Structures are given as structure tokens and as C-alpha cells.
Image (cartoon, rainbow, N blue to C red; front, side, top):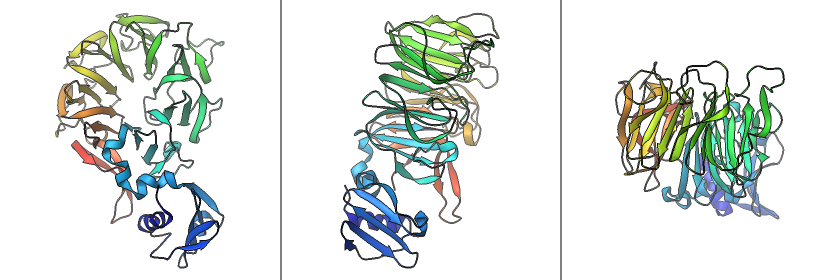
Length: 432
């Protein structure tokens, strides 16, 4: 944990407009503080609590966190790459979860996606506290803590209201896995999760609704689906659900306008409200708008659904697929968005495909040639994930990589916020 002097030095370097240094430490129990006469601001520490006072805080004493919250920022070596457990792209926000459970976020504050209590852009990572075991979502962010509690922020979080939440709010208990299915960065997609007892729960838009007056338009709080208690994982697309049972069978339900359910049935307008069994021996799943993906225990990667426009199913055609279609072998995971799909092989190679358009749609192969089948874009990777904005990855040495429009920072010359766009995977430093 940083001492007061180190914390003050970091504040002077990072926020020179508010705390122009250097200044000497001063003590007035219980505070150790520094005063900046040119701006009228103070930054102080009382025990483990950090405060600011002055024009920067509107003239009121403001608590800005614990010293432990700033440890990674003051001493980046304490959060070396090897300490990273998960990297997640939430569109215009990149989240990093450390092995000790601490979670950080930086990027655009639009729609409260950062999760630090304000809808403010953050070019420097801010702490979202500890005890996290996973983070997922885009328009709605959903995190799971080590006690099984589910926390959400952003849009339509599942707390009984339709309000935006700018800070994580506890919305459920006793979960083992959660996923959010927003099909665009700020859309309100469903959230689905599996409890420790194997039951399946959903909240957000009711995509199983068939327009009867008795069916809710959305579930404002977590609502159980069916009575089965042998589910292990689940994901949501724009208007369909995928879930895997303990025996490895994959089930799908919802709307089937482009064959995304994978049951081979003709296109239907109404939703299938009963789960349809579509594949066996499944170990990993992903979904996007009107598309579905699965990896089996043998390493086979399948895709199905809407393919006519951009070849995102991945079978090197532009033909909609109404049943699971083999894409390739040797895979262990897959992540999908409406702009690209990324998948990881057992040998650590990362593969990507999609329309390959500048900015959002960059596949990562160094070209802008549309890719309707996987192309290898990197090696030595441990995780890959994508959103509509960009893809991010964690390599086997704990270093972070991104391609497409994956990061968000302030331009040193203009002072404007810019999105960093790269056509190939590029290593980036998350902590300042």
C-alpha cells in the first residue's frame, strides 16, 4: 500500500492541473496532507482514507478512496502484468481484473459504464474494489464476486427499476456464472445466469414474450426460467438464449429469425419458449445478434445463424445456417460481437473473422479484407474477448493486447479523448 508521500507525488504527476507540485508534506492529526496554494486544493490521508478539498471537490471534503485502491496506480510494479487474471472489453471501456480480485476500469463514462459512481470519462484506471471473480457485459455490466453475489451497473441492471446505475449495485445472490446479451454497446439486452444450485435465471428484456397482455415486457429483477437444476453456463444474444447442462448438452430458445436457435426449423416470428436441444459435448458458448457459437470437448468450433450479410458465422460462406455448422478444430473458447468473432485454440493461437472494416470491424490480420472464415492473428494467448468496439487479449505472460478500437486515452497535444485503432494485435500498458 502506498505511503502518503508516494500518493501525493502520484497526484501531482497525474493531475497537475489540480495539484501542481512539488509541495512539502504537512501533518495535522489525523491528516497528513499537501496544500497547493495556486489552486486552493488539498489532498490528504487519514489512516487508509484519501480525501480531497478545494475547488476540485466543489469546496467540500470529498472521500476519493482507500490507499489500497491506489496501490496499482502509485506502484505499477505491484500490479505487474503477471498479476492480471482477466481482461474484458465492454465497448468503450476496458476492464482488468487482478488475481487478488481487484477490478479496474478506464474508458468512456457514457451511460455509467465505468462503474465508479459518475458518468465521467476515465483515461486513467479507477478502482472498482475487490473480491471480483468475473466481469461481463457491454451496455449493462455484470460482475460476480467470490461470495456468489451479482453486481451490475450501466443500463437495466435488474434492481427493480429502469434507471441507469453509475456504481455497482448488488442485484442477486448465490450465482456461479452470469452473462449479458446486449447486442449493441448501449442497448438493453437480457442478462442470464446460473445459480450454485444449477437453476437458470434471467432479467432485462423479456425476449421470450409473444405479445400477449399477460407477459411482461421485461423482467426488472432476476426471474427463474423453468424448473431444471442441472445448468452449468448460459449466454444471451439479441433475442435468443443458449445454455449448457451438466451432461454437456446445449439448449437454445427465443426467436429464430435467422436460424440462431440451431434447431433446423423454418424461420419463425414468435419466440420458442421451450428450450430446444441442439448440440452435445459442449464446453464453451457465445452469442451475438442472431448468431450462436459453441466449442465441444473435442475442440470442434461450430457457428450458426445470420450469415448472409458479413459471413460472421465463420464457415467461409454468406449463407444463413439453421443448424450448427463446423468452423474448425482445436479450439477451447470463443467470444462474439456484431463486428467480429475471436476464438482461442489450445496451442495459444488467436483467430478472428468478420467484415474487417476500419474502426469497429477490424479483424486484426493487418488488412481490411472481409474474412468469412477464421484467420490467425496472434500466438501465445491465454484469453481473447471482443465487443463491437474492439478485441482485447491476455497472453501467457500476463501482458495485454488489443486490436480494432480497443483503448481510450487523452491525446497529449490536443487534450482530446481519442480511441486507439490498430489493424493488428498491439501490446498496451494498462496502468500509468
